[in-house]
Structure formats: structure tokens, C-alpha cells
Image (cartoon, rainbow, N blue to C red; front, side):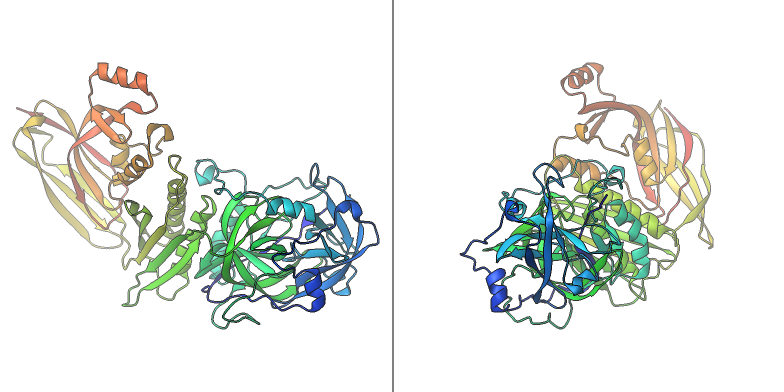
Length: 607
């Protein structure tokens, strides 16, 4: 049984800025007759019912540079309903000696097929690997038109669930026994430090993105045949669809199938099956083709943004030439132990699954891809996510030791994914600013002693707490803290707790996971995310055990039972009660240090 696979776009991720423009090559008169249709003249198509075995055609694609060239094919037949009801596949033998040797090439996806001067379809599938006579599958022109004519809507959003719990990748993984297996897109991490590529390969694979180290983006000299004013794209031109642009570039390169005015249809199959999207449409320059019996691939450089891809469907991707889409502006700064600060700037697509991984890759590259980003002792990461002029979410975390890097990145990605998947408002950040500060000394400390001067005190007295600790492979320290005893605490059985901020948050009734049903607005969600104690140092608190009544992010201790019953009857998801401690006095100790110990001491206050 033959196995068909996408002749997929080739994806490239590389350091470099978007500084160039692609100018489509001026084709010969023959090319103009076949594929360079004026904007006002509809593209003539031939229906699949008119196709007969033995008909010869030409496929236009870019072998090197930016000029499309033709290669010869011969129609073998049409496989009806090959990809589903009404979705047929045109099968052609690749008779041109250049292509017969390499087969359908990843990056040729979308290359238009013309028969008697009319568009018949777009190259999209590799029929079988290791075949002795090369064939390819072509998506019919009618299916390309169907995608072109779909209305552009707001991008589709996955369900509001944590990134780590999403079991399915962005693209389906069909059974190996399926009659037609799509070849999943190949993503590359070219230009990133090897350590970054190794670190993020499993993460991108989990998202359904296969990664390799081929490809790049343009920087410095312009693209071949380019000028100050780029010419319109034509059928057969190379094109890229980007997930990130700027100093970090991630894009998939394929071929333009048809151009209708400002409307561009390409690839002949899905990129990531995302449906309604808003992704940059970019210029591309083909460096070379690497032939392989397994899967030949085009190596390309991604160029400047030419427009916006709005459809990512079964039969093609489609979009409009002009301005690029709204993106999330990311700025990553590394403050080294020298006067010079390095800053990495790039833009990422607004997608809840892809965005966090891309930003984390940028953070990693900013740190690892330098000579002075030493992280052996640990690092501090500060982030600010801006949603609007009045809505932002700031965070600060400290990580110790060489093992902290991967752990800190995982925490950052999971936190960012949660922020982007809020179930209250369809919004994305406009900008994300991140600063990484390598530490000169390991911030981990060991608590040796925490002791109260006495376990009972009178109202109005003071007691002392002795705290002793040792630096990481360093000297010992001791601090005496004075604790005032409030007269209002008389007759109460209290506790003195020394704990990290996260542990005290949990004891005070803050849930580690906030239920979507317990909040009612995006502003309340941001407020809940901000309501954290510092992540460094230790918190010393005098607390009282209580029952908390919570309304969204606001908590009230020991509310009358009648009020609780009325509120919970009205909205049980919003109003909750739980046992917790209420801090009566609190103080932050050991700032800039990390400790994991929690100590609890009883305290009784008498009249």
C-alpha cells in the first residue's frame, strides 16, 4: 500500500534581524503566461475531472535564490477522497531528471502545477519513501480556492488548561498504518548555541514541532536580486510563515501556489493545522536543496515580513500581502558582571502553546549564547508582562547553583503558559520584558537555629527570636529579631513560623492552583497572580489559626455562618471557606538568599 506524506515546509530558527526585502524575480514570457497573472485577471484553473493519465505539466518552484524555475511532470491519475470525503489527490510522476533524483522536496510544498496554461493544483505530498520511480501528490486547485475564500476570523485558541497537561501536539500524529501519512513540518534551531538546541528539542517535539539544525535568516547583505521596493510575490516564489521574527527567527518555508490580487495561497497542506491564525508572511531565499532518499529538503533564509497568514487549513495556508500581524514584543536583557548589558529583541506570534517555549528559547540564548553569562552560582530573573497600559504582571525569582538554570526555565515557561491561558478575557500581552542577572555567589543558605526567647508572653511585652544560618560554603551568621506582642492577642494560642514565601502563602490559604470558577474577571486574575510573597529569603510571621471565607481574591477570617451560607448558596464556586493561618505580624528576612526549611514554634499571649 503506498504511503503519502506532506512535502512539508522547512522551518528555520536563527539569530539575525529582519533587515531585507524579497523581490520576486522577473519571469520569462512563458512564466508570465503560466503563473504571473495580473491582479485583475482571475487565475484560470482546470478541474480534476478534466485530468487524464499521460497529460504533461510544469511545476514552478525555486531551486536556488528567489527565481522560480519549471520542472516537468506527467499526470498518473486522481485518487478520489484520498484525504477525506471530497478531498482528492492528483498523482503525478516527476519526469524531470533533476527532481526524479531527489523526489518531492520539503520546501516545495505549494509549488503550482500548470497543465495547458491552467492551474491544476499544488505539490503537497510525498507518495512514498525509497520509491524507485518518483511520484508526488498535488492538492487540487479547487481546494486551494476553498481556503483562499474562507473569511478571516479571530485566531483559534486552545482550551484554558496548563501547557504541561496538553497531551496532543499541534499537528495530528496519524497511525503508521494510515493510507496517507502527512510529513510533519521540520523546525530548525539553526543559529542557536548547541546547548540551547539540545535543551529545547524535547520541548518543541512535545508541541509537535520536529527540530533540526538547518536554515537561517537574512542579516547584513540583502537577498539576491532584491531592491529597495520589493516586487509582488508570484506563483512559484518561495515564502515563509513565521512564528517569531527579529533577533530570534522561527519560520516555515514553502512555495506560493497562487496570487489573487493581495491574497496569497501557499503550501498545499496545513502548516500546523491551527485554523484561523495571525502569523507573519515573510520573504524567503533558497540557499540549496539537500537530496535524500529519505526526505530531500530545501535550505532557506527567511527575509522581511510581507503580510499576514490568516488561514492554516487542511488544503493550504492563505493570507494577505501588506502589514504583518500584531505580535508580542519580547526584550531579554542580560546584566553581566561587566559594564556592558546585552539585549535580545524579537517578536513572537500570539499563541498560547508556542509563545512560552519561544520566549524561553530567547531567554536561554541570551544567557548561554555569550561569554560572560556565567550561571554556576545561580541567577535572578525579573519579568514584566504588559497586557495594556493599566494591566501588567511582574514577577521576580531567584535560582541557586548550576542545576537551577533548567529548573528556573521550566518554572518560567509554566508560569507564562498559565498567564497566557487565562479563561477570563481573550487577550495577549503587548510586550514582555525580561532581565537576567547572573549571581557572583550561590544564594543558598542553611538554617542552623531558630529559637524564641520564651514560649509565653504578656500583652505589650516583647520577645526575641534568634536566627543562625550559614552561607553556601561560607561563614556563619546570627541575627536577633525583636517581636512586639500586641495587646489584642491576649488569650490567643498563636504560632511563630519561619518559612519561605511560597510555604507561608500555602499556609495562609493561598491555593497553588487558582480555580477559574473562583474568579470573575481578568483584573481579578491578575490581582490573584500578583498576590505572592517574595520568592527569596525567609518570612517570619506570628499567626493565628482561623477559617477563611474567600470572595475571589479577598479573604475574611471567621465570618458569621449565616452570611457564609447565603453567599455560598448564591455562588458556591466563587465563595469558598478553608482552614488557614492569619498572619498578625510579618517580617521578611534574608533577602537575596534561598532556604527551604520551615520552622513552627508555639506562642501563648496572656493578659
